[in-house]
Amino acid sequence: MALTYKLQFKRELEEKKEFKELIEKNNNKYFIISELYSSTDGYFNSNFEGKELEYEFGDSSSISFRVIDKEADQIAFRKSLLDTVHKITNEIYPEEDYYFDFNGDIIHEMRENGIVKRNSKSGFYVEIE
Image 1: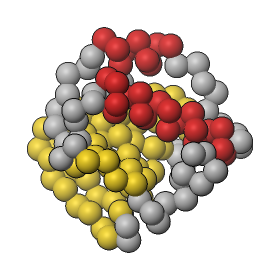
Image 2 (image 1 turned 60 degrees about the vertical axis):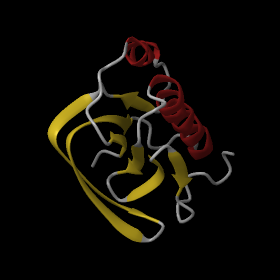
Image 3 (image 1 turned 180 degrees about the vertical axis):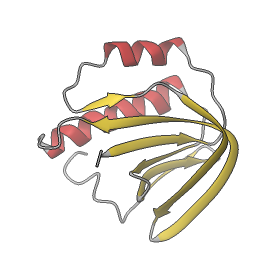
Image 4 (image 1 turned 30 degrees about the vertical axis):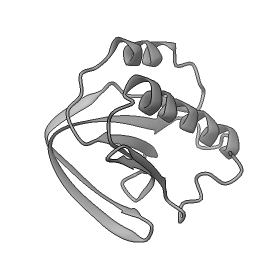
């Protein structure tokens, strides 16, 4: 089974030139960044702070990060992934609400109404910040 992290946006986005460049220049050994995928029936179900969240967005976009080195140093991997996620969410799509999750099981971080929240029940951030 593939290990996949995902950025789910609440609305459909236009693929920006800066995002395409990020994909093209991605030379990390830990994960592959997908293109921006759009759906007309966006659905999201995951856990945040011990509560199950379920959303139907309609038109929405997402980006996947497929893990390619499952044996990698976990701290270096998570730091690289988080740096990439924050480049996308803070520099390329800074106004967009999002959910950053793992395999649809747990939301590590989300931005709703412009406010970023981290899941205190997630071990993702241990030793990387």
